[in-house]
Image 1 (cartoon, rainbow, N blue to C red):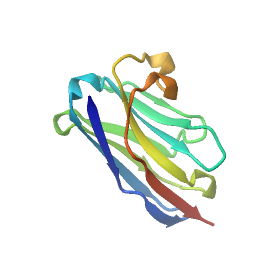
Image 2 (tube, one colour):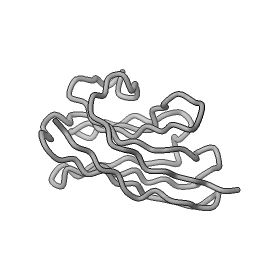
Image 3 (tube, rainbow, N blue to C red):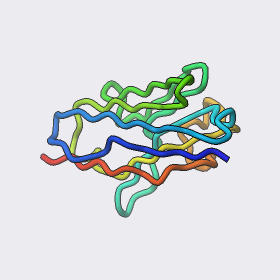
Length: 125
């Protein structure tokens, strides 16, 4: 089992920045891929960004060029730097980990079996 705890959410004005953190504990060797997903009310969970233990990354089209995912394997922590935030980025952001996904499915929530509780991000216009 992998336990994931997110932090760093909050409220920010459009154009601002936030950094989310996710600390993994437990069987962290299972966290081959770690990712951030988000979900706004009434919408499906969307893949935002993902990163493997060897630092391969994938980004959702809506955040490319604005968000950066990074990972500190020694600290079992993944970060999401969010710049140029827009009101449409408002959502609950979830950290997830997967032992089984591959690069091509690294933004698909169904391939992740460990999830955090989520942290809310609100971007006001």
